[in-house]
Each structure stands twice: as C-alpha cells, then as structure tokens.
Image 1: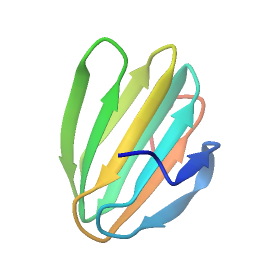
Image 2: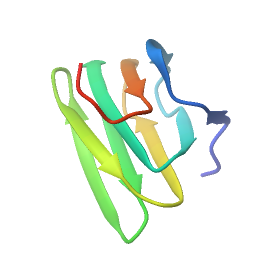
Image 3: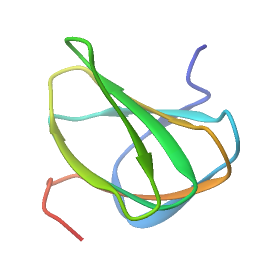
Length: 83
C-alpha cells in the first residue's frame, strides 16, 4: 500500500481515516496516539501497534509510516520530545 499523504511533522493533531497511511520524513519524531488505533513502522524492520494513550519516540533515517486501523487522532512532533 502506498502512502496517500507525505507529511511534515507538526505540533497539531492529525485525523486519519480507517486504512489511511501517512509517511514521515525525519530523523526524530514523537508520535502520540490520542484516539483510535495505529500501526507504525520505520527502517530496519521496526514496528509497533498503538492505541489511545500510547506514545513513542522514533529516531530513524528514512521514512516512518503510520497506518490507521480505525479512525484515529495522532499528534506528531518533529523534535522527539514528549507531549
């Protein structure tokens, strides 16, 4: 599945529909799942599922992909520091 959005991390939450994919370009990001459920993957085979309240800091070269399993609200911050 190809990402339908190439996304630049920002400090405001983003709504994702079911099965929507976004791709991040960046070295360090903090991802906070505010509602719904997500699947996050990044280079070297790393991946994680997330539900409301989960958060993760990812530091990777290459693309970070986020897939929404259900309608979701996700906050993404470029600098990798928490919410």
